[in-house]
Length: 455
Image (cartoon, rainbow, N blue to C red):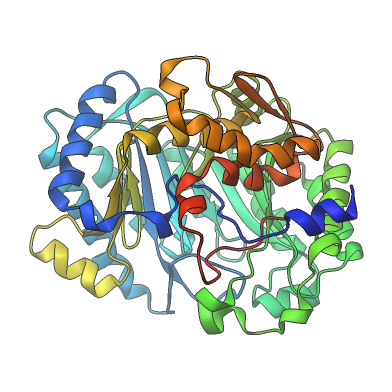
């Protein structure tokens, strides 16, 4: 890869789990009433045809990992589990009371924080409480994030019995110096143990999350981590770029110096070498930062053009409506986004008043909806087109084509009069390509750094 391209395109940019991105939400036009209206519209359009997705945020962790950008609460007091689950179930009941009919659940994902901070019994109470108010779709998919250090066989068995078939384990890197810097000490044998347990129990999709660009990470570290990962043969992998954003996360990312973090071409080499080693073991690139074996449902979805991306990440099936439960969770009705209160105490107070604990959001304009479709296509298929009215820009097209001109000249994309294809050379720069469509970003460029680097 050209050194000049990495240097040229390694600029701050969004990860596009949504469009518009959170810093560009128009909160002034958002209200609980507007959120409820779009929620009910989407529910009526999609509940019977595809069902809905639930993301449940479980924020507690026993220790702070300094690479993490998630909303979490650090504690060793497990008595917090019961009141939190009661609050999440109350929030779910408030939503169910709004729905005109019983909801059908297509997906549940437990994220965090550390979902396996909670006991198997409390997780069972949570899931049963959710399902008491809903029906499961015929081909539902339940998944959760497991910490290798505290995921027990009892966790895996209990969630399997409740219908979970997907689990992702956070690995990051196996080098002791890197683990110390990010405050995430977990030996290889812990990851191997939970991976083998999951296989023995019958999980059909086991994923490992790896991160490149971590402090003190070297090429030798990366090779060792990939080789160890390959030896366990997970079905799919997330291979994320470390987002170094200490101006947002404060002391959480100040356990090391800025110069300890690999940058530009050194960082990109970590990815390219890792990707090559994964390819040798049959892992195929799908979307941004994700890889899967040919037999995995995620790869099938990618090949069939059905891969979807939302605040849960990449999923093998799309639902129009996604409800986020728990502190800081973000919901998506397709027509609007809504985020819950970020502080647990405020979240509890809102629920005590029988209020949905939403504190901000964004109602998408017609322009937003069109651009959102294109960014989703680029993120999930490396391709988009504007052949029909639903994808056409009208007066916006010249502005976007102008933004794409330099990317075309650098060989990162191929353009026709009505379509765009990201080339193999352009795949590392998919975030930059999406930025060319991001008219909100172009019209109101930030004066301070809001986003992590794109490469």
